[in-house]
Length: 309
Image (cartoon, rainbow, N blue to C red; front, side, top):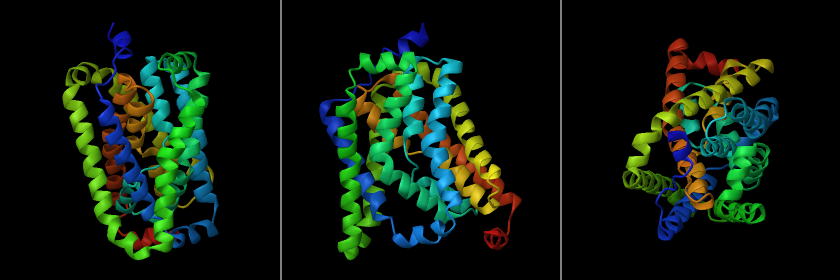
């Protein structure tokens, strides 16, 4: 009964709230672009195996594995869709901090976050539509919420691509302005997003309180598989421990705020999917911090790690 009900929940987000969320999301993507520097990419791509493997794991393997999980475990359709949306999202900036805490290759993490964010305006909607379309239950759900593929891709490109290009142009032509805007804008956009999530949570608390137990196990399992996938790909390629840490964290930490925004604006605030994105946003911080703490405790001397790079 509860499983069926979760697919009927539509989170209460007004048109004005959706517009505000779109603006916040644009600010976030603009802030991401202000953090990108050519120098961050040059050294990493002199040894392209690690970033290319990481991006393949993040943008191709994880969405495919997520689809397989939904086909085997058969969660409720909206939960399955939420898992696919999160898997299709690019890395988030918090992964750079967690990688630094873990004494991994922060430049690799920054590069992967930047490139996956640049590609997100195309890869995110394509991955969502492709893999959700291959699962009969989520395909039916896409039809139910009337998602038009062309409109979805177009609006996502507009929502993500335009602020990303604007940020890159600011860095290129107005570096002084970029330096002044970078930190305040990132803090402001983060505060707005957290505030929006908290407001939506309070308004719809009766749903979240009832159904969080149905969603959390899938979030934890999904994130654990993402961790294992990133670590496994790095080990198969024989990457250094320094690179392995960055790749593992980057593949397992996604921009779940973007995922939540897409669900609220493009999928009619579908309850189960939104709960997955919100739950992932909290849980990946827990798992990422735990990984960083474990690696840091295991190797207390960072110079030794960096020397292995």
